[in-house]
Length: 407
Image (cartoon, rainbow, N blue to C red; front, side, top):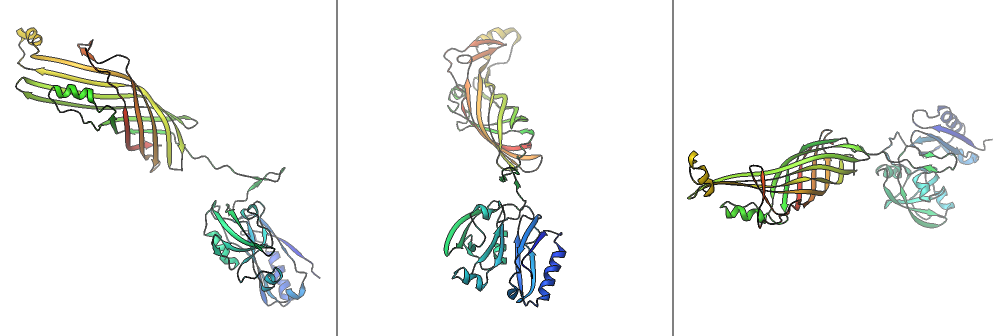
């Protein structure tokens, strides 16, 4: 009478109404009593082929209806194991010599799906899924849907009177592309994350001098002023950069620090002004860790230095006595300078809060090279070498945390 029926069911809203009607009609004519449920877990909204063998009329007469169910409407973010499932019957367990009262029968695998890649085959019985017993089809489907795409799960299954273990990777419900020549699945490359176009901001920085400002502090203390903090100083500055291609960013930055102090003692009025600053060109390579988190490794190449101005006024200025006043050091002034070529390797992390605002953190180390020995004295734009002055370095750790406008 009927040897077999083969129906192609188009998932989603285009389920074949004609085939369902035929199947229901056949079941009704055969006076079936118990439902036959076949669940399809295929590639989302694609075509699924189902073969139903109706050659055994005695069994078919026991069916009340034939119900073909799809596993629901899914998005690409719903995980897929890639299996066709059916609840176990006592006869299935008996014929397969299966001695347990739980398990879900695997009636097929989706080509290229996670189950097939894990070695599962038609006729296997899934006993445990990620450590939990698989008791029936709908429960196993729920457990699969509770996971995430790309997650690896442990599966215990029964085959040929033996129990095996394997691992499967849950895939997206978007049907994979297959190479027409080789038949192999084409693994889609992950879309590249946007590295941004660049930006800029105020850049606060903490600078820790390797030598704890020892040379500068000696002069400042000798002149009667409180020395600089040995644990570091707080610099202010600005910087920016732009994307020049292939995740490389070119930019520039500048930082500075200054103090101005004055005191009066028995010798007159003393004034001390100290400044530190640097600036240069930056180049770094950005690597995206996630959509909103980036890290970059790069450097700054520039110039900078120290300036120290000292003045002493011991008397009122007299037009007719200026020469003698300056000669006697009662009233005097000197500007000391030390300049460098600077190289600063650094590591930066940037987290995007909005499309236009982020948080930036960077740590680096300043390395210096001075193109003149010792310190110089600048008097009326004339440069004089300072005898016995030290070879002060501009080396030290830099740490910066602050806002960043752009990305």
